[in-house]
Length: 365
Ligand SMILES: *[C@@H]1O[C@H](CO)[C@@H](O)[C@H](O)[C@H]1NC(C)=O
Ligand SMILES: *[C@@H]1O[C@H](CO)[C@@H](O)[C@H](O)[C@H]1NC(C)=O
Ligand SMILES: *[C@@H]1O[C@H](CO)[C@@H](O)[C@H](O)[C@H]1NC(C)=O
Ligand SMILES: *[C@@H]1O[C@H](CO)[C@@H](O)[C@H](O)[C@H]1NC(C)=O
Ligand SMILES: *[C@@H]1O[C@H](CO)[C@@H](O)[C@H](O)[C@H]1NC(C)=O
Image (tube, rainbow, N blue to C red; front, side, top):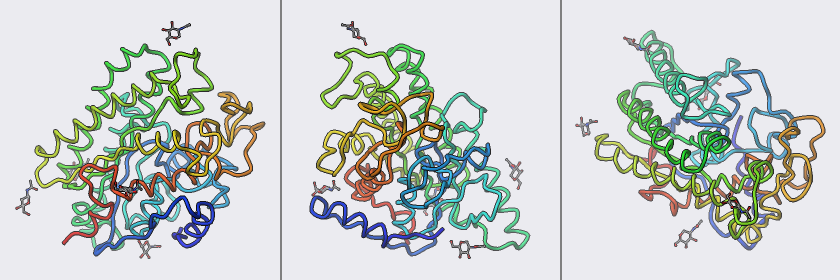
């Protein structure tokens, strides 16, 4: 797949002619950008489909690829836009067995993944083990003279991106009290710490860590949880779930601060996805969105169009005409239109600690 940034730019500026004036331009790399991604459906470019043979069927993919690609979205994910920014191909899922091309890295993210339970497909620990095997095997094949593989120095110069935790919180909130969820957060963070240290011990030095979004604003949660009026914040999201996400994020930020001096020569960029996504919902009209809490594709109509028994890919779903007017694609995942704005905000560096540009890993001496 090649990047079609021109098409994106055109449709993007057509849709938001005045409101936005940021430059969504590709940035420079002076070496081959190699990215290894770990995570859940927020960055799954086809891993679940490859692993289980379960596609996210049409209308997934309709806005950009014009066919299902294994992404739970109508088009591109935030990760896809980040790849476009450094002019590299979209990442191949590690488990993709047909015509894989791993010269620019690999994607270990699988929908449904969490940090825990351990050794359960495809938790973060398993994704790390897959990476370790991938690295070992690549180095072995390199030494046998195979070309077109990731080289040892590429593993060192690569960017390691991590976006996980949403499912840990989501599952925990389905059965536990608020206090019990908060108590479990350190165990989630500990798994992320282990994965980062494991990557570091294998030579990885550059990390890009996304925190988790506002769980309490997802139509899935709004449409399924028992709530009363006092549960909601001023924008209609469930306060307790968002507070849980914020507690997770505060722990994750602390982890990054703790690992920076510990992992010598490493660069760890922490990206505040929560603020980006919450701002999108709170100020949805100014970004051109309507119904910020309603899924484009789902069942049941307003206010959330979410029914756990009739998901976007099940028969009987309904789908909105203009995905670009919606933030939520299917009740859990964002639309391509929302992802494009999220990516542009990430690329502004305003939400990053330290405020490094995304291309820092491929644009250094
Ligand atoms: C894999 O992608 C690289 C660019 O990242 C390209 O140069 C190479 O030709 C591709 N290999 C195959 C077999 O398509
Ligand atoms: C990686 O390769 C080394 C030797 O090259 C071997 O000792 C080690 O067990 C391998 N690790 C894994 C996880 O395969
Ligand atoms: C609303 O729900 C909260 C907990 O979510 C509970 O503490 C409160 O008593 C409930 N209020 C009413 C009026 O049911
Ligand atoms: C850190 O970088 C310096 C300079 O490149 C190098 O000599 C040293 O071995 C590195 N240390 C680690 C732990 O990577
Ligand atoms: C980033 O911050 C600068 C300075 O505060 C501001 O001018 C700019 O609009 C911000 N960009 C985005 C995308 O938020």
